Structures are given as C-alpha cells and as structure tokens.
Image (cartoon, rainbow, N blue to C red; front, top):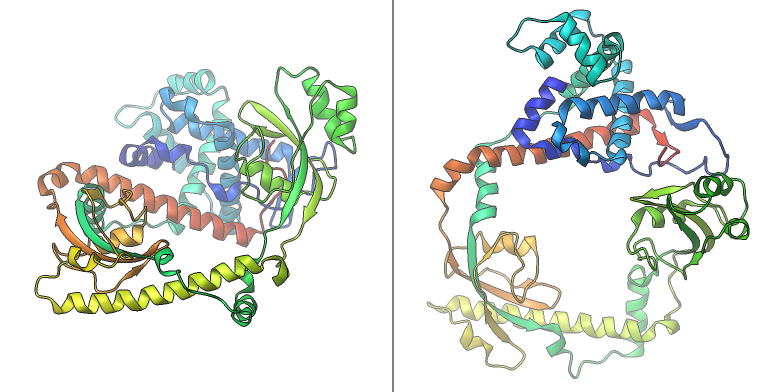
Length: 467
C-alpha cells in the first residue's frame, strides 16, 4: 500500500494523505463520559477496543504518514488526521481478518525493496540503521507493520475501483475554464404579492397540510469552560472534571470563568467561540446535567455541561398565524408568477428573433445582462447555483432555455448570449493534471463509501471522540 500510495501522491498530490475521513468523527454514543479512567475506547464486531490496543493502530498511522508524506509537509498532519487514520486502519484490518488474508514473508521483503531499494541492491545494515534511527523502532516491528499495510492494500484493491473516462476529464476541464454571458428576465415573487390575501380557512388548510415546514428544531442549553495550557491548575482541572457533578464545583476550587448559553440549535454559533460543530454535537448527545470529557479545539480545551433541552416541536397555529399567512400569500405569488412566465416564454418562442428587453415593459418584470462568469462562479442577480450553471453551459448562443427556472427570488427566463470556445491547446497541456484531480475525487468518494459499508458490517462504535 505504501509504495502504491506514494505513486498516488505523485499522481494526485499530497493533499490526499491529510484528508480526515469524516465518517470516523463522533461515531457512536459517548457512553464512557462519566466512567473516569475507562480503558475502552470503542467496539468492533462485539470486541471491546482498549486504549492500549488502539495505541498500536495510532502508532501505525503515525508510521504511515512518516513514510508517505514528504518531510517538509509533515507539519500539516494533525493529531486528528492520525487519530482518524488509526480508526480507518483498525476497521480495514478487521475486514482482512474476516477474509483471512495472509501475507507471506516474501511479500514483506518485496514491499521493503520497493520502498527503499527500487533500483539498488538491498543493504541490510543500511536498512536497519534507517529503521532504528529515522523511524525509532526495531526492524522486526517495522516489518510487522509493513505486513499489515499490505493487508490493507489487498482489502482496498478489492473494494476500491477507480476508472476515469476521457470525456469526464474533458468535462472537468470545460467546467473550470469555459465562460458564459447570459441575459434574463426575472419575475420576482415579491412584486406579485400586491393585492393577494389569505383567508382564515386558507391559512388553516395550509398549516394542516404543511406542518413539517413549521417544525422548530430541537435545542439545548449548556454551560462551558474554555481552558488552555496557561490556565492555572490546567491538568488538575481536567482530572477533576470527570469526578464532579457540576462545572460550578470546579469554579469554586479554581479561578475559571463559566460561560452559559441560551437555547441553541445544532448549527448555532457559541458566544466567544463562533461555529463549533464538535461542541454542538456533543452537547446534543450528553445526558441532562452530564459533563463532557475534555474536548480539544486547536489550542483550547473545552468542558461542556448540558443544563437544558427542548425537543423539536410544531407550534400551535395561533402562535405562528402570521408566518403561515405569509407562506400562503407567497405560494399564491409563485403560482401566479409561474403562469405568467410560461405564457411569456411561449410568446418568445413564436418570435424569430426573441427580444428579452422588450418583454420587460411591465414594472414587475426586470431585464438584466451579466458579464462573463465560469461554471462554478456566482451569477450576478441569480446566485451560486450549479443547476443553473448546468443549464446555461448546455445552451447554444442566443438560445433561450425551454422553461422558466423557478428559483428563490422569482421565475427566470434565461438566454445564453456568449460562450467562450473550448481551449483545446490548454487542455492538452493540462490533461494530466485534470486526470489527477478526477482520480482524487473518485478515489476519496469510493474509499469513503467502502469505509461506511465496513463500519456498518463491523458494527463499529467509537465511544471516545479523542484520546
């Protein structure tokens, strides 16, 4: 795997080896939180994984990065990268055991030869010096790690199959390099709401038919401490945090400041901390009044206590009548706009040379032209919408899309004005680079899918979000 992975790095860039596989973050219940010094960090296939056992996989992950990441880029590898890679290795090696994959001594020798002596004669003394001095381990242990790496390679070869078609590479290049200019008519919904009303019966009917739209998300309330290495008694506070019942008890013994939130949703920012998805997720998983384990966030460590919870709920109609009424009026405006946009489009199709500006005479309609923009760019007056880009770049110059686009602001009738030609010469020069990019995208997608499938098969549960 290491030799093959080195070739991958040349092919797709070193970014691949520092990707954190999100599927390994915050799996499972945080059941260990109030147990103090618990040795179990997860389970796989009904087997409990001890901290000591997991440390072997963590060391293996460290060795992996030492071998495949160039020295000048190793600072980009974070402890979380290594932690996630360790769980990945544990899971894949579980699968290797299930399939009874065996690796011969000769395969290990061949891998070492490929890693260090591709075009040279094997030098045992030089090899042993390198392993001891540069990797800090005995050759025998290193060779057992190599045996495991080869097992992982065999599992990945069975489950990860990446194929790249020429047309896919060309399409990726086209999306990155071609530019378009469009003209469009927009019929804004807000301009059509005048004189629209909603009767009590219509409001009630809409509320009853669309109740999920009005569901208010679950929320929690938390208290938290933000600590770092400069905090007095830092280590002692962390140790005591798993023994006390409240964060207040910590503040009574140590000079720390407790922060408190109102009710927050899963995606809400925290005062003084901003958006911290890890904190929010753990807060929602905690039992009432429970204190989380220390959670590392860059240079800080956070302790969280859950103090309140509100379940997701649909408010009674009388509490949100004004909101429901606005949605009824908006729905009527959308229907009215759609009818007028379709009639207008039919009229334009009858013209030999459709003239969009001339159709903008009523005040509710607005005509606009854009500058050149790329497939992935923000479109002036429209927004960032890949669906719209897909349509625009499929049109021919002066062609009008055959149906109105019902977007967030209104109905859009779009005409392509100009399209830059495909840059054939530049494509020839950059083809290999785009093949590498496409390989990376497909490889990561296939690997993530494989890991998710193995996680389900192995019933893997991670009970410690970090070590």
